[in-house]
Length: 471
Image 1 (cartoon, rainbow, N blue to C red):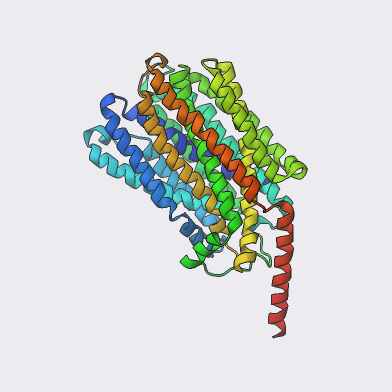
Image 2: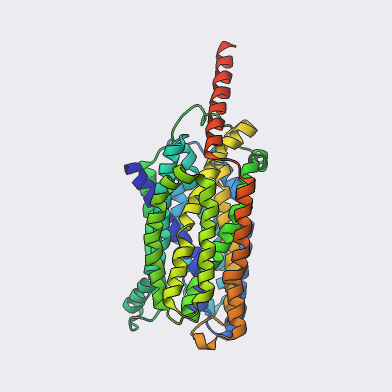
């Protein structure tokens, strides 16, 4: 139980960091730094920088996985990267949510250069931490039930971390704004945002430290079937793993849809409902449902298996989208839509995570060697790619719809609302349907199939070991 709790604390801070960066950074840019119509160019440049860096850095994620796979220290291959990555990324996050000592206005070009460097450092070191903390999952056990327990604990932590951000962000920013900037409670300032971000940085680094002090890798025959990972091996491990590729294709469409809608949700409350404070209820609802949803996963996996969880979960999300479209200005129906939309998300994530984890053994059977971090790097790679695309879209949609600065719901035109709805609702609905079809028809790596693969690997490696000993 202590190990499960330690793993959960690590992913708690990890996802609090991720949600803050991927969902709220553009909100900070458009609501605190560049709020005038004349600042549209700067918003566009910042958006472009983020997309370029994230897409460019994503290409290196499998290589980062290869570096982690090749790491050999007295603390194992994962723990050093979890701690170092979290610490450096957290320091960078504090700088990112600032005006760089006024350079955003006094020297915009220098500000953009520093922002680019900071974002690149954050992205690289967060990638090391992200890949290491999740690719440790197949290293703690090869037994599906134990993996499910660790996966459930880690997802419980990450769900709470991600959703607690939604609960606390508005009141925390208002509180710190009141304390640091001496403004009336209810107003937001850059200092208030910075105070909130420092708390997130502490949670991320502290959680990583607790995980590293309590979790160790398991040593067994199957995990010993490794070799130094070369650049060729990295792409071979991914390219020859057909199940991993199909899972990745489906999950990308799902993740992109989820992040775009989630990123625009705060805009929805601020500029459609005109009730930014009510956004806190989204966090309360998703926290409660997230705990319930994650706790339910082991039971559902035994009852209906992963494929049904994944496809059925998308069905629930589609119901949420339909409610959203008819909710109008009703806070009650908007929150109902949020509930339907969010409750299956942790379940779909876990079904994806556990299937990708099992694809480590599938790839080992196909390729003849084990690549844990390279294989597991695909999931965070997809999340970041989805986040990069989302950041690009959110900034542009906010500007195009007129949802910047102190605009009110009455200021948003019908055309602006239509553009907003297209990206928040209509496009994600279509992509989710495609994601469900891919997973249903193309992903064949079931729990039963994985058990057969593990048995085949053990037989192969035992036979090879016996042959070597008799030679």
